[in-house]
Length: 156
Image (cartoon, rainbow, N blue to C red; front, side):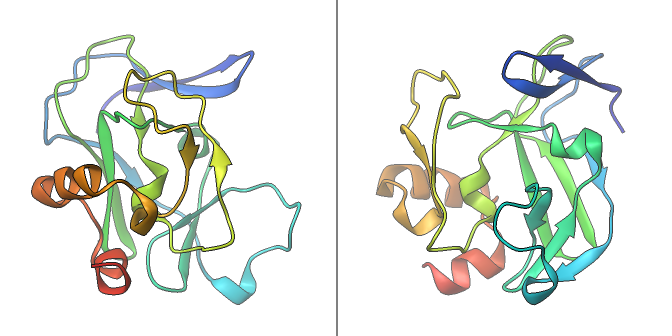
């Protein structure tokens, strides 16, 4: 696994690479308790759960919960075989670079969206589930093979 560091910023926690990470390398093995949707805390609770299946969520630790969204991510969550969930590099990541993934690739919640402040030149302006992404973005992610089966099953 890559050496990572959690840092505080005015925008909240961020995770950075401390060494070069090669494309396709596993950045982080995501481990934690698995919860069914009905077991999650109610509205207003700290959002520290990552969807990894139709109704299945992984409770994130402090480091993993600090990995932010980007519309132009350098990593992706691979979750087709829970509890074996990991973060893989989509390209080479340089030391000191923030680790990010696109939250839209893990979500099947019609009722949740958030403004995006990732700062990418291709920022979509909001974070929402995969099926609402522009078709060109969906095609790019499908071609990379990083859209989880549970997302594709409900959102071809």
